[in-house]
Length: 217
Image 1 (spheres, rainbow, N blue to C red):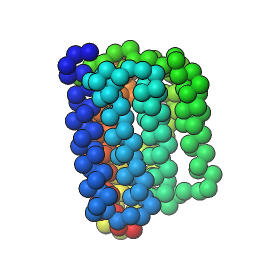
Image 2 (cartoon, helix red, strand yellow):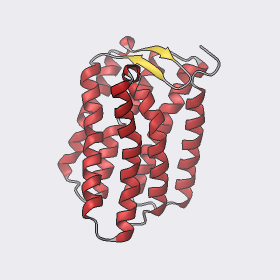
Image 3 (cartoon, one colour):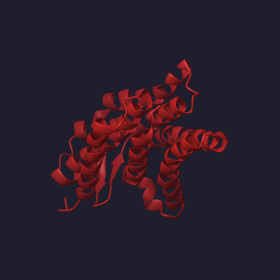
Image 4 (cartoon, rainbow, N blue to C red):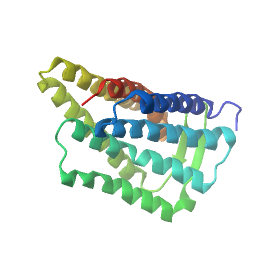
C-alpha cells in the first residue's frame, strides 16, 4: 500500500458527506429529493469503503463485498429516481432492482472469490465473477436515465422545471459521457471502471446537490 492509495477516495467521501448533511438541513423532503440524497449517500459509501480498502488496508472479503454491493445498487436507484421525477414511474418499474439483488446475493454466496487486484491513488480494481454480465447490467440503467432525462428536458415547457431537468441531465452527461469516451481510448480504464466511474460521479453528486436544493415539488 502506497501512502496516498485511497486518499482521493477520502477527500471525495468527505465532500459528499458535507453534501448530504447540507441537503438534510435545507432541502425539501419530497420523495425525489429523498432518493437523490440517498444516491449521494451511496456514492459516499463506496468512496468510504475504497478508502478503507486502499488507504487503511482492510482488504478482507467482507469490506470488498460491501463496496461492490454499494455501487451495484447505484444505477437502478438512479433510474428509479429519474422515472419518478419524469412522471413515468409505474409499479412494475421496481423490477429494475432485480438484477442488482441477483448480483448482491450471488456475491454474498461466493464472497471468497472477490478480490482487490490493484490499489492506486485514484482508483481500485477488483476481481469478481460474471464481470461482463455485471457490466451490461451496470450501464443499461445509466443509458436509460440519460434517454429519459433528455426527452423530459426537450419536451418541458415550464422554464423553472426545464432548468431543473437540465441540472439532473447535465449531471449524467458530464459524468458518464466523458467516462465512456475515455474507456474507448484508455483500455486500463475498463479494468477499474466501477471505481473510476464513482470518482467521476462526484460531478453527478454536485449536480444532484444543486438539483435537490432547488427541487421543491
